[in-house]
Structure formats: structure tokens, C-alpha cells
Image (cartoon, rainbow, N blue to C red; front, side, top):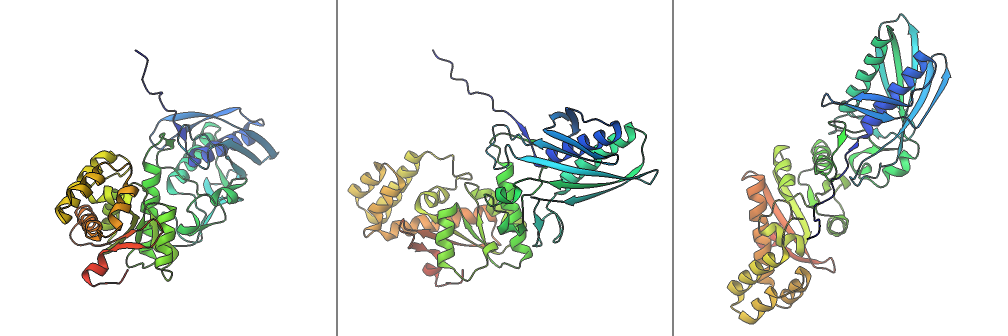
Amino acid sequence: MGNHRKKKLKTGFTTGTAAAAAVKGALISILEGYPPKRVRVRLLTGDTLGIALHCCERMDHRSARCTVIKDAGDDPDVTNGAEIGALVTLHGAGQKEGVTIAGGEGVGRVTKPGLEVAPGHPAINPGPQRMIRRAVKEVLEAHGVRSAVRIEVFVPHGEALAKKTLNARLGIVGGISILGTTGIVQPLSHAAYTATIDAALSVAKAGRIEGPVLTTGRRSERSAQALWPGKAPEAFIQIGDYFRHALQAAAQKGFRQVTLAVFFGKALKMAQGIAHTHTAASVLLLDRLAEWTFAATGDADLARNIAQANTARFAFDLLRAGHDTVIARVGAAVVSAATRFGGPLMGVRAVIFDYDESVAFDSAAATGSVTP
């Protein structure tokens, strides 16, 4: 028998941890006159992590500039391999300690309310700011120095990296965010995606969006934007596979109406109440769809063909030719499942797109309400 054990995935560290390491390296360079090769950073969990410095340059007797290469481990991340740096300046020995943190090249600036950082400030979240301040405190105390410290975090190529993210939708312009809630990146974790959903809902709420449109990816979002061209960009939120999380988060933020705009494959999973839609066996989904088909049409041959379909798309094509009642059954079940997750106080509208991106089902049309 072969060894079928899965390879253990490698953890990484966040952009916030990288920034804190760069700050610590630069401050040590100023106070000791030469740059360290590695520094140990205290994470928000209380643990410490050794991080190699990429490059360090002492500018003069009171300032230095260091960078770290972000390592996301085995987690897919657009910032993996990015250079994260800090320019640190000491302002007068003997002064009372105070730390100022600014954003430089490649660090985004917040322009919309609803995020952890207020509009007008650099997109450096509170967690990374705490790590940076703690790193400064450790180094100053170890050297017996009391001084004001100014820090400018920068990310070469950060503006280009940001174009691969949803930052602009959240109102973060000009670069990436410096993030981290623990300091460690867990490989293939759900935390980063659900945090993005939460942030997008917060921005929508702060922007007085009445009913956000939840889509599962770029294609369904593009179809929804074409259907409702007048809605603000921040009204459209990609939830990926996180069906239950998105509905619960929307309810917690006080939304009283949401619209789910999806293609049939995702709708079929949602209709069966699957909380995380990536984890669904298609054969079971199609068996249930076949049962619904027979109940709605009484056509045993059609139900058998649905059960034996290779994909949800093929099953949809069979139903689209004159069996819209079954598609409507799926849509109604989507609304029901979403209502269970979001709670009875939140209204849910479900729109299912045909694969040519036209509307195959709209629960609002079925009930006579057409407001998105």
C-alpha cells in the first residue's frame, strides 16, 4: 500500500508581521550601528517568530531602512514574495517615547467608512500597528533609550499588487493593506476570505447600501452588475463558497434585505442548505434535483436523465427546455436556506442566471416585488 498521507502545509506570516520585522531591523540598525540578519517578532498570539531581513540600510545616525520578503507559506496570496519595508527615524534621544506610523509607497489609503481604519488614514490595520509598537518598545527598552520614533511602512510594487485584490471596491486606493489578526497565515484557511466578506459588508453598510448583492465570483458579479447598472460598486460582494457565513454576517451587520445572484450550479448547492458550497458531492445534488424534478413534472424519464447528468450545467440545460417550474423550485429553496442562515428578519431575493448570463429565475418576479 502506498503512503496516502497528505503533505503538511506550511504556515506563513502576514504583511503586518513583515512590517513589524522590518521596523525592528531598522531600529536595531540605528541603535547598534549595523543591521541584523534576522529578528524575532512577537506575534499577536504572544508567540515569537524569527524572520530574515531582505536588505537593511542605515541612512544616517538616526534613520535606517529595512525590508522583508513576505512568506505566505502554502496559502495562495497575491502578496506572497512581496517586499515589505519600513523607514524608521529616531527623533531625539531623551524625548518621551512616542510612535508615529505612516504609509509610504505602495501602502493603500482608506477612502470609505466601514473598515477598521478611518478614511484618510493609511490602510495599516490595528493588529499590525500593535505589533509595530510592541517591536519598537522592546528594542528601545533593551537599549535603554527613550525617544520619539517615526515609521513609514512602504511596499515596492504595492500599487500593482493591489490591482489583483478587491481593495478598490473597499475604498482602499494606491496600494495594498497591511493586515493580520494573529501574525501567522494558516495555509488554505478560510479566515482571509471571510474577513474580506466582512469588510465588504461593513463598507456597504457605512455607504448606506440598502440591500447588498451577493455573488459567488467574478462572472456572476459581472452578470449582476449588468442587471443592475445603477447600483454602487460597493453593493456587489463576492462571497465565494461562504454561503452561511455571508448570510450570518449580513444579518449581524443589520441588513434587512440581500440579493443572491448566482449560476445554477451554486444555486443547487445553496438550495440544499450547504453552508460551504465547495464541499458538496455533485452526485448527491443531482439525486435531490431528480427528486424535485419528478415531483414537479411527474416525468420519470426526465428525472432519470437529471440523476445521470454529468454536470449541473447539463441538468440545467435539460430543465431550461420547458421545465422552469423545477428551476423555480431550486430558487425557492435557495431563499429558504438563505433565510435559515440569515434569520427571519432579513428578506432574501434569489436570482439564478442562465449560462448565457440572462435571468432564468428571479424570486422577486415570482412574488411581484422587483426592487433589487
